[in-house]
Image (cartoon, rainbow, N blue to C red; front, top):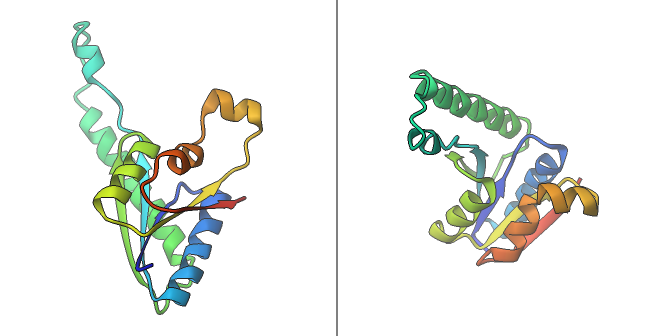
Length: 146
């Protein structure tokens, strides 16, 4: 187990998963890639209806990306990353899709992901990134509960 992928979103569960991933990485001399996914607004749907998009949308996307990077940096700086090779990426898109794509393309050995513990009703209506990742991942997934 040489490569761990750790999606973080700022929640307590994802921060707990990040700490657990570092613990595992130390034990197995693994590297850890921290990622966060910013939602990419789909502006193409407006074009087909002739709705003009604010030209500042590009600036908004850049600002969202910058904010996610700061959050990711803050989380990583609050962890003890000594003796662990750590990387970080900010991705844009639908969270579970981007996590699965990164895991596949990066040939990761394990995904360590936090789960907030939604009730069954909330999970039904809102979905669960962790549930979708567990269901479709091509590698083992460790789910760390809040």
